[in-house]
Length: 244
Image 1 (cartoon, rainbow, N blue to C red):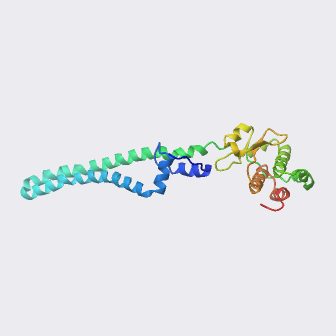
Image 2 (image 1 turned 60 degrees about the horizontal axis):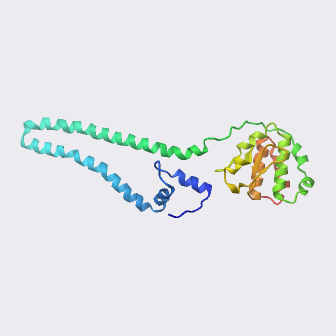
């Protein structure tokens, strides 16, 4: 048994391919990458219903032969054949229900991971441009590292919108949380998230991402806080004048 490391989004995709409870990642990959194994198993499973269907017409053939030999017995022979059909249908219905019951838990299992989404308080856009004055080019030039400029802008946004800054916790990725009120909450996404405290605020943010991702996060933060598109563009262009 070999061990490999995979990204979170790839793991989520593998988990979404689960067909039954208890199916391991190795079994899922084998089924996806070696479909011939699945075809052999499917063929063996498909043969079982065929046998049950073939056994039903046997009485019909016997009844037909008896009917041709003795016409008086032909009518009673047809009654069991007519009743056998509902039994076969009922058996198929029972199999369908049991299969549906088994497949339902496995289909819902991967979804549980994304259920607990943060509640977002809707904020109307405002006409404030106060952050433009705080996040000036001169202010940003005092920081030599891009991550420090990133934290400075977030700190200014919190200072000007402390009552609604809680809403930035709704900004999340596919398999990670970007903002939290504790370092431990962000470390649950992995030890490489490199969480840092936003100055003069109770919030923390992940910083192990490139400039393009930081730009995207700043855009989402400013929009969430209700800033107009032109204000968002001005602040972001000062942070990354070379663009994304």
